[in-house]
Structures are given as structure tokens and as C-alpha cells.
Image (cartoon, rainbow over all chains, first blue to last red; front, top):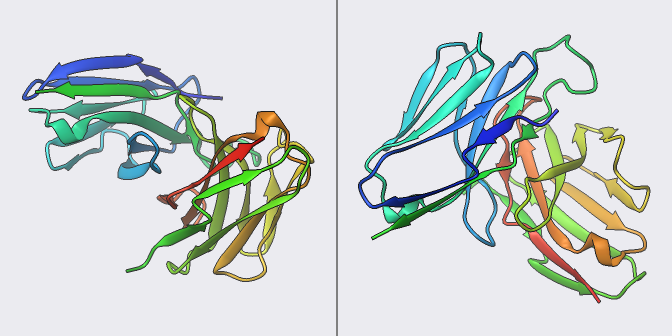
Length: 116
Length: 112
């Protein structure tokens, strides 16, 4: 089942902050974040494996709340290069169902536009 | 540099004319995936290989087939492309199931 991302789109001025949320109705094993620019392949940003884990990549960071089955991606002091569509991908724990184990279920994406 | 390579980057075919897309990797990863991505949508998993074990998604049309002759290469065959199959096709690899997936640049398929 596809995780739910919000918001669908966000427009930022350079230097502003934004938060993208990803939530699931199922228990989560891991959350993966990707950024995709128009016409290009998704680029891996980070993976979160444990509840409560937080990671950072430059000024982009993320948290994973296992109990709430959700993750948030934080864009801090946004740069023009941050523009693109951000996807979260989630996996379910082993033993949940053999069909879904390990497979990434992507959210619908959040389009981020950073303007000068 | 270790990477995922897809060829061709752009493919134009005619309605019903078979087409093959290729993916190769130098990462020596065990798992290779094929995704279909239509405009403004999330990538949709078609199938994946764990080594030689093939796993088909339940909703992947029979029109789509895949081959993995060795660790490095994986092919996507579309036997009779329809207009609805026009999309970006993404190949990805990972060391193991649920590990980070690394995507190739994609092949954009146009069906005339």
C-alpha cells in the first residue's frame, strides 16, 4: 500500500525551510528518501532504518517515527538546487507478508520549487 | 565509477513492435529491479531479480518480460507495446532486498 506524502507541492524562496511528510498505514521497516529532477532518474538521499533515527545530508535531514509510522524530510535554508520531486519509499518488516518484504512502496511525490 | 547504465536512453517504437531495453551494473549487486514511471507519478515496480530468482508483481501485464543472463545485465522485453506503455523505464539495483536502491538514468520509451 502506497505511503501518503504531504504536501503535494511547495514553493519556497531561497533560504526558506520546508517539511515533507510521509506516513503509512502499515508498520514500517525502513524509509528511503529520493529526489528526482525533471527527466532524470531518482537520486538517493538517505535511508532511515530505526525508529527515532535521524540523518542529514548537507542541509537536508530526515527523521523516522516508527511508532507513528511516519517520516519527515526537512529542507533547511533551501537552495535552488533543492528543486525537484521528492519521493519517500517505505518497506515493511520481514514476516509481514512475503509479497511485500523488502519492496519499496513509493509515495506519490512532493514537488518542490525553490525560487531566487 | 561503479554505476547503473541503461541503454538506450531514448527509444521510439511502433505500436505492436517488440522492443528490448537493457540495464547493466558494475556494483555487483544481487538485486535488480525494473520500474515504470509515467509523467508526474511515482515509479511503479514491474519485477525484480534476486540473483536468478525472478519476482513478478501481480499487476504487471504479461506483455512485459524480463531476462537476467548474468549478475551484471538485466533486460526488459515489451512484446507488443501499446500507446499506454509509453513511459520512463527505470532500472535499479541494490545489494540486498530492502537495501538502498541505486537507479540508472532511465530509458524514455515513445510508442507511435
